[in-house]
Image 1: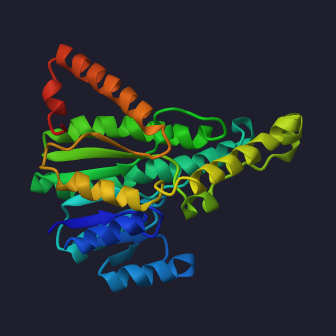
Image 2: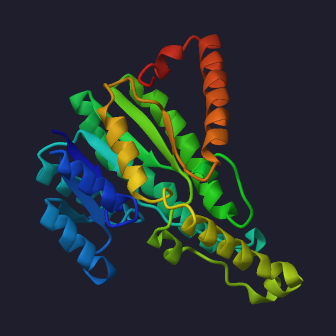
Length: 289
């Protein structure tokens, strides 16, 4: 039995993962920005299943500190942290205002940093822990109209590369989850640009993002295996692996992109180990298979 904290527990990946971990006898706490409003029904379902819910806004440092502390107190400790809270964005890159980009980064990058600063003193003090992060296949490659989102996930990947090495000496293992696109409510809350004057300058091309989005929706509808429960299954399988033997990156995709990303990851892992070996610090990579 493990004590698990999941940020963004009411989201498309958070809820099925929480339910799967609860079903296996773990103690699970999760964060939501608010228990009321759109989250109320999901919060009630999760609490009925045994989850402990805390209010936590990852864009606010004080809220994050309070929420993580409350969760650890309710759990009676912390073994596994799943940094899952996130926000998407979609649209022609030039049309994204700096403020819109900052909003995405504030959740997907700085939000993770706030949670880590709140949780790590506890994990370092006990000398052991497992931290998971929700990244994306387009945190490894970039595709049109996802520039801001991809940039935030590329930044997350870089940050986690550093956490992986810097925390290894404290007995804290790090694992990135890289899903392909999944049919979740995530798409309903995406940050979209609002710059009609510039949009007209793109002419007919301004309509391409909507066409591309419809094509993605059709592909997902035609691929029933591509669903959020697959993320939960992958996380359960990952956590079943022995401590220190988990892969650093886990790809979850059923539309054919995954194998290419795995090939890319394998090359990068080899390059990273070679560079670290040349500098005599390869032991900083030893907490992953």
